[in-house]
Image (cartoon, rainbow, N blue to C red; front, side, top):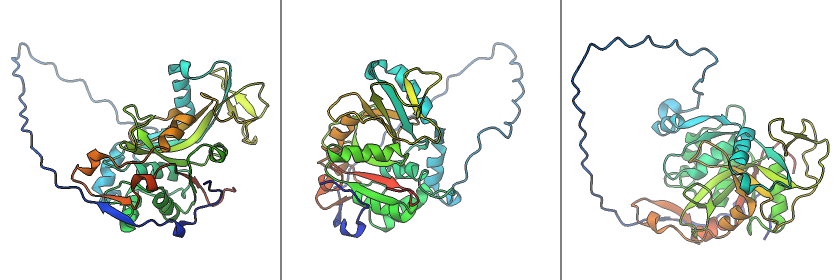
Length: 343
């Protein structure tokens, strides 16, 4: 079933039941450390003088509301980094993986820049929502601490995990004041056009998928369920492009929408044409964007059916909706847009 309107949030409230795994016995490892002894052969010269302090143009730690009260937020901020420019990451990936991208196509990049935040524990969904929030919320921003707090208060999570796309939509609407549209039935069919048009406008999408060792989508039946935020697309098209697109000065064959030009494609590649549409994605275990083949993401999202056996026996409590991972994540995604944006 395809959703073409913002979420009727109140009608999507599946009862949730926490998963209470049996206690897990652990054996502590005793690790000893020793320092090697070194004999002094000659007088050691004094160290060189310290470099001058950074100028005002150096990196400055951003202010985040609630930082002084939250150890969780302090640790997360220490692992965050400034905005990673989408264009630069894409050009790096195009050079690094030339074999992935057809040389007979013109490539158009639509992207929005997001900051990076490395997650602590099973908080990939809330970290993805925090990154998406930088495109949606007021300039003051919404802290990760606030997202965690509200999610716990509403019973959506026990420790940061999110196994319900519907709950994520409710949380986004409450904390970010944005519109949230829930996609059912996977990213294929009519939903494909809806998703691509949404990303072309610079609005983010949250997508659950199975994460492989290199963070890319894979097929593990939900055992490696993870969240990512998509902030743009790379589309391969044939023919001559209009003046609405400007070729990248450093990379022939890569085009960007011209400033002030309408953001529309000459024609979207048909579904089933492999290697022509890539999602510009970011998740909470890497500093950089990644380019994922659209069909690969679609297939991974559509097979999220089972709760991980490893999680079921790790001694932690998880909030999972009635119907499990299949009911909460399978074939679903969340389109987020600011209140000011039009459909």
